[in-house]
Amino acid sequence: MALVSAKEMAQVAVAGHYAIGAFNLNNLEWTKAVLKGAQESNAPVIVQVSCGAGKYMCGFKTVTDMVKDVIESQKITVPVALHLDHGTYDAAKECIEAGFSSIMFDGSSLPIEENIEKTKELVAICNEKGMSIEAEVGAIGGEEDGVVGMGECADPDECKSVADLGVTMLAAGIGNIHGVYPEGWPGLRFDVLEAIKAKVGDMPLVLHGGSGIPDEMVQKAITMGVAKVNVNTECQLVFAKAVREYIEAGKDQQGKGFDPRKLLADGTQAIVDMVKYKINVFGSANKA
Ligand code: 13P
Image (cartoon, rainbow, N blue to C red; front, side, top):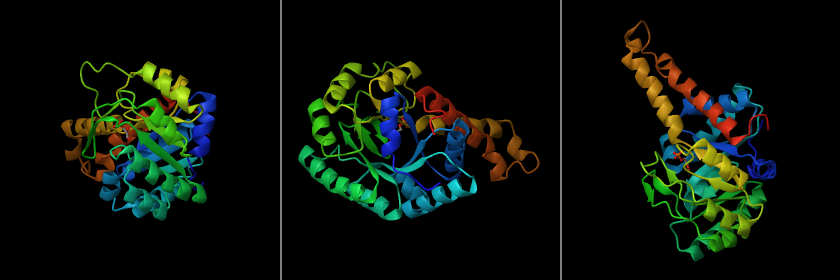
């Protein structure tokens, strides 16, 4: 199946009170694992790539070709959107060129006027090309790709002005943080989420930093309008743990256990299992 825009899947998810899992890719193993997890769950899925991960994987064109080829060779039939995560303006343009089906323009560090102006331009291009576009208001906390945010809460009126630009989905900070949550993190600000939802109506909302938030909290956010949940760190943690256990058990030193196809197999399976677990929590299993 060809790549699809995330627009329809996000809108159907809002109406159905579930969320689409958006999983960050880091390499070929991740691509295979996330797509396998989604296919086995019969769930629509968003695979996304940050600017840093795009560079690591030799550029957005390489990523597009890899994702498309894996879809074809692995006979993936569930809808897949290929999305840029936290894109700069330049990266957004590159991904549009490279054949992504969705982008996020993260103008959250720009003055709101400039964020709005650039978002408008990208919305027009995405509309013309049938692509989806996510915008962000209020920096998401934690650190990702060297970008450090403080876990701000978005201003509901700013959310409304950005939503009105015609974006497909809106990432709004509600106390969420990328990466591992610190001890004593107070939890999601449902009062802020409620105020944002009241302003933006049926606009699908995006919850970043989906790793480590208690499942019930994520599910509550989904009932309140979150339709896309981003997960990166938890897949990385289970991958690293499984590979570490393999090596600590001395398996890399038995026979041909050093072959990367064996060395990384348990880690790759751990990602498949995590993706399936998250899809169940988000309620998107069997929604393909
Ligand atoms: P986590 O790494 O905390 O899961 O966050 C992922 C994310 O929000 C990507 O934008």
